[in-house]
Amino acid sequence: MSAPANASPAALPTIRWGWLPPMNSPRYYLMLAVLGIFILGPLGGVTASYMNFSIGFFVGGQVLAGILGSTVTLGYGPEGKHGANYMQTAAASVAGMAGMGVLIQAMVWMGLPQPPLWQLMLFMGAIGMFGAGVGMLYTPILVDRLQLTFPSGLAVANILRALTDPVLLKRSVSRLGTGVGLGLLGGLGSAKPVSYTHLGPFYPPRAWRQRWADWDADLTRVVQDGQTLTARGEHLGLAAVVADTRGRVIDGAEVEIWQCDVLAHYRHPRVPQQAGGFDPGFQGLGLARSDASGALRFRTIRPVAYPGRTPHIHLKVRHASFGELTTQLFVDGEPGNARDFLWRQLDEADRAPLAMRLQPAPADSGLRWLAQHTLVVPAG
Image (cartoon, rainbow, N blue to C red; front, side, top):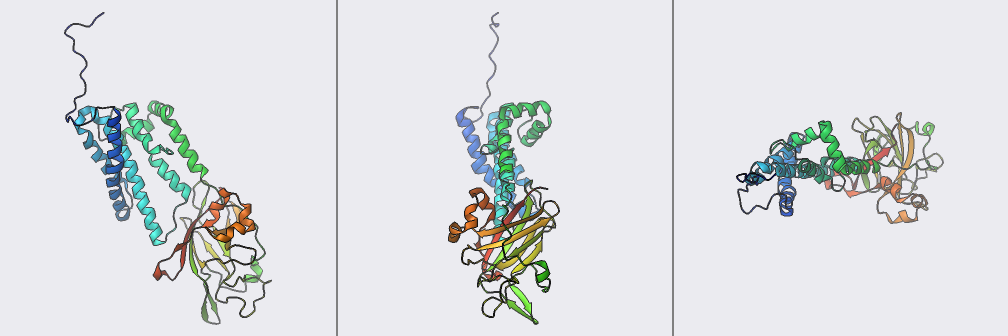
């Protein structure tokens, strides 16, 4: 049957401003992406960074990006709501990543321990709905493809609805679920525990070192006969975080480190302590416990080489959740690593968790170097 002669075709969306590209065209999506990623996202990132340091969270930066996004598609009228949602979520993703990026940089400047790398990767992926690579686009595509009915400006409500409505959740996972899977695999795959190494011949036995009370976390100062001696060498501030492969920080982990002094002398009963042959101001072994955030600190010296070994620091970690772990920390980029028998035995993937990256310390810190390191231990 033919349509009545007086029937009019369906009305097309009216574009208020002629310079806007047609809806659903490649130029339309390019415009939304460019505005969301390069303009609205950075603006929201500035707000997020300010909120981080003023009130402790940065959701306001993402909200700002969303509000501004709803104004960009005003020229498309009511039909522009899905484009607004697309752009809002893209801008909010950029704002969240920018806020976290500024926070991490501030932690580096202040010498604070950084979150584990795998947690940062998972956080960045989670901002884009657990997407890996294309993760930042996952949420905008979800909102746009499913054509959810919330009005422009309510992108967050759309996302929450898509995550709580069983029907919509199945549709979103079936269409775009690969981003979720890749993000989860990427986050879990990057959490690799440190490799076990042998104890070595110079671990001071407990019975021997109980004769000294000075086994604290500062290896660069030794109290002897009422005087405080200071270690020779380049002083190093070593900040560490103990976390397991599931991302849980370990509270109360006991961490011991021991290393030779600047004269390549270990504090050990089998090593003669002859005058001039060792540094009396270097403690040799230190002990610290992680706090509720998994963090701990040592003050020591930059490790030095001795015949047959590259610079390294021995390390032992104990906790009821996983038992005991013995390993060594190396200096990242040290030329002697390539000739070290233990370093050569490690796979490339096993070397990264054991390589300390040293950075110059501030002039007024009393240190020469700083290092932030994450000790990833097996999950109990």
